Amino acid sequence: MARDEQLKARWQQLKSLLSEQFCEGELLDLDAIIYLIGVQELGQGHRKFEKDEKINLMHIAICRLLEPLGYYEFDFYDDDHWPHYKVREELPYLKPGEQSVLMKEAVIQYFLEKGLIE
Image (cartoon, rainbow, N blue to C red):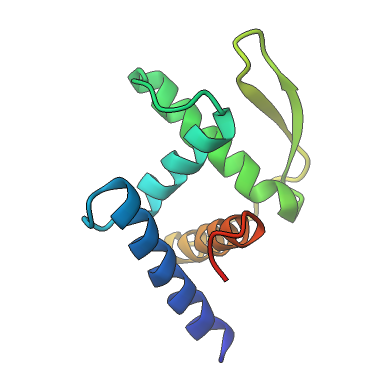
């Protein structure tokens, strides 16, 4: 299977799985999946988050997703046990479609590592 076809198939599998689990089948988009990863990485379970916390959750997820690619490195947990990352390498300029592909690949790798998809 070609790389693009495999990415597309895994992405559809992951979207379906997470959508069924968290949204009663309504399809989640990339931003929603990134948000879920942020909640998972924070590790404080399901609770109501304020608007600025939701933005921070997405930032945590993006840093965690791009960490294996060398762009971020975990730094420390603050007093509220929120993880903080430092920039190791600046992200290159990417067109919106390229950004989407990069993030989908990183999300899929994350869930492969977690054993949720194959």
